[in-house]
Length: 303
Image (cartoon, rainbow, N blue to C red; front, side):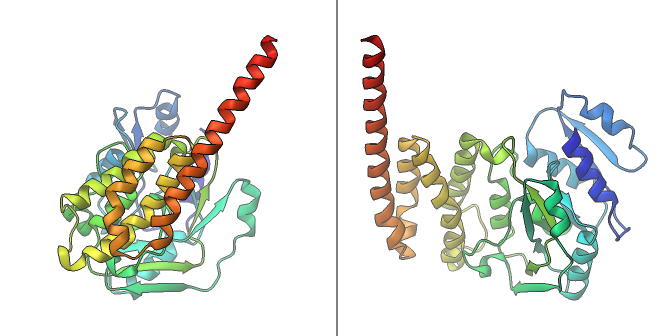
């Protein structure tokens, strides 16, 4: 509850005032709903069964009245200038379809006091697919999307996965106007053990959602923009395969590697193509060594 309270505090601390707040309670059982009831004059509260973040954001979007939607997860925070800056970008950049805010990663709330409102710096692209494979955003809390474009592409996936944000970004791929904010930071991204990204199974499922959708031609741009999509998509897949190896999910790692192998060849990703099998071999040897040490330890204890 403390994290949600801090998030709402940051929303109501905005200098920009022309906005509405919609909160979707995704089947909570910890008193969240009762807590939010006291703020009904300041926000619109919507209840749904436990269906996941993508579905919750879609429900909120269906009830939104504004031309643009800025998403904020319940453990992240905005800075006082966040919405004001987003509005300035919207106004000066010819109504872009998609804006990516800049994160400030923190664990200790005291670190937020170190963030200042630096001069505005942005990177402009014709659309998201034209932005290359550099990491351009950091989760749904960095997303500001024109509602018309959001509804046109079908919003977030309703599958409960980690990676629904990458899926939406790719679906927005050819919508006109993508702007990445390079400075200042527009939201605080809270790093903590209970965050959704720590769920490896859901992260793996999200990677497969991206790969499956690309293979079935579900993302826009056709074959003309295929290379651009795959540059971005493989940028997200590679760390998932490596993380699977580290956690001993070798079969999953290899399956994802094989599924995207031809794309990496097409993109001349020689370092990954050759490096992944080597890393897999090292991980296997380490696991075997660990098992041997455990066996020796057990025998020693029994002896």
